[in-house]
Image 1 (tube, rainbow, N blue to C red):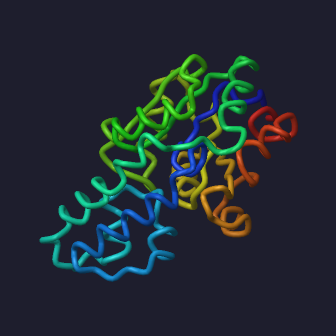
Image 2 (tube, one colour; image 1 turned 135 degrees about the horizontal axis):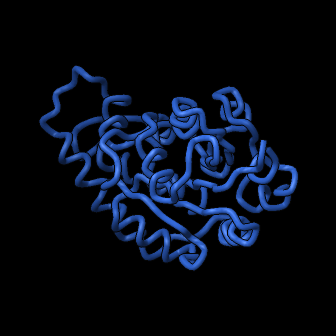
Length: 222
C-alpha cells in the first residue's frame, strides 16, 4: 500500500486551542436555558454538532423549547474569542510539512463559516490548504461521517487515499464509519487511553509531537 495521498484535519481542539472555550460557553448557554450541566460533561461532548450535543447531554425526551436559546447564548459568548484564537503548538508547521511532502491538505471542520474563517486566520496557512469544509457542507454532524465525506470530495480523494487527524472520540467514531484511519491528539483534553480505546490508529500529544514523529506516523507510512 502507498502512503496517504492526503491528510484531513479537524480544527477545533486539534489545530486551534478552542475546546475549553467551547465548553465554558456551552455551559453558559445551558445555564441560560435553565439546565445545570457539569462542565466536565460538556467538555467530553465537545466535537459533536450542536444538535447531537444537546441530545447527548439533555436527553432526546427533553423540553426543547429553550434549545435555540442555549445555542444562541453559546454563539454569543463564544464570538468575542474569535479574534483571540491561537494555534496549538506546531499546527502551522505540521500542515506545511504535509504540503511540502506533496500531500493534499484539507480542513475537515464542521464549525460555522464565521468560526472557520477565524480559525484559518489564526493558523495563517491558507497557502497550503487545498480545501476546507464548514457546517454548511454536512447534513449530519459527528459522530456521523458526513463532514469527512465532504472533505474527501473537496480535495478529490477516496477513503483509501486519506488519513484523518482529530482530537475527540467523536472524530474517531466518525472515521470508523467510513474506514478512514484516525490519528488522534490529546491537546483537546481527551486522554491517550480513551482515544486509543475508541480506535485511533495512533495518539500524539499535539501537532508538534506528531510533527516530530512524522516520518514514523500513519500520515507518511502505509
